[in-house]
Image 1: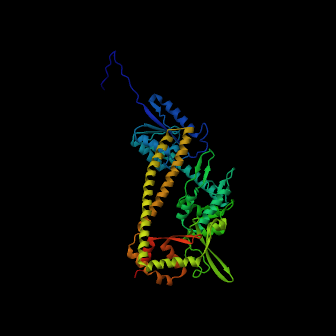
Image 2: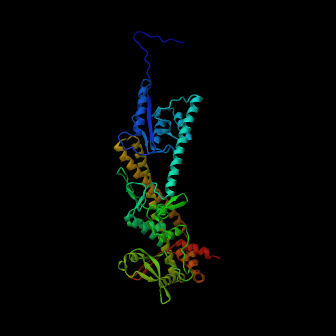
Length: 525
């Protein structure tokens, strides 16, 4: 072996390369994280002490903090862990130091994948409390055994928690979760108490859907009124919730058995120890509508209301609901403004109209259009213009949502990056902003799906002038042969909305262009 020759003026100095150490900490729940010294601080302190003991080997703790407080080890979907892996891929980290193996993951497969990823980028891995050498078969076996026990411990804890929650729900107890509109959590916890103001909103929402079982229509009305989902304040004083309603969130509310005084467990429900908000008959009717079951009618061939769900009061933009009465053995049918029923007759001019009269008027209008080519041309022109305007509006909204999503998703990434490098009160403020921004992403994505569905529906509404002529030409003979349930279906096929003003006796009919095409297909030989 050649020897190094030294002279008096030169000295060989061995320079120890620096080892950049990233400390990763995790806690499954957020309980106690607001304390001055919490579990994450204890893990970090132990890791820093270990790195200090290796200072002679060039180890240095990086100032960046990779802390996942309130995140389970069952998955790798954690902001700080993602940032750590990104920094490792970027060559900013030489070694990852953790307090204990299960802080990184409690899943054997995820753990091995993470180790393989770190090894690919030349990043070492050290557990402060569990020393082993993964370069030998025995060391690798030891690692797998420790990980298997960590995963087993997680599964046992999860199973015990599930059993406890299931037993509580069978007894009708509230086991926690996001608060829902209409209820508050009792100060001592463990049960729900009715919020009187919000419960009135809940009942009103159920009644809206009962009168007009269209989720899109109800959502539009809720937004017009400025009503939002549940808003609440956490124990730390943060404000959460308050998002706008969507069809998905509306259906979740309408199908939640808590409002019927019951607790859900899987496919079963049990009597809850909280008060119900929605009356039983109203609850049952809404559930039938959600399941697509028709309402029971005493005489479907004689007393069906053909304009049910189509007729609205133009004076106050409220639904006009079917209403019947009997005098001297004779049945009388009406459509009555729902707002006047709830708030009194003085809220709407002449709130009722005879059902036979208004239904016959609408049918005669369809017949007139079928017999008059000029009216056909005008109807077709207005319908096409209406659909084109709706398409333009939907496409403009779709573009706006796409731009907003790009901006908001960028904000989420920026906040996650900031949160990974912040601690203390500043981190709490960033976490609040992140939660609100993520809720905004969810709201935009939900509305984006709704807009795409509406655009697809409008795209399907394409017929030509001949389709319209054929459908209207066959209307009269078909109408005379139909029973009331089929007549009601044809009305909903051809008409989108009817506005009736009791004061001026004026009526405005909005046609459904796609319905004429469908009717033409049905009557085609």
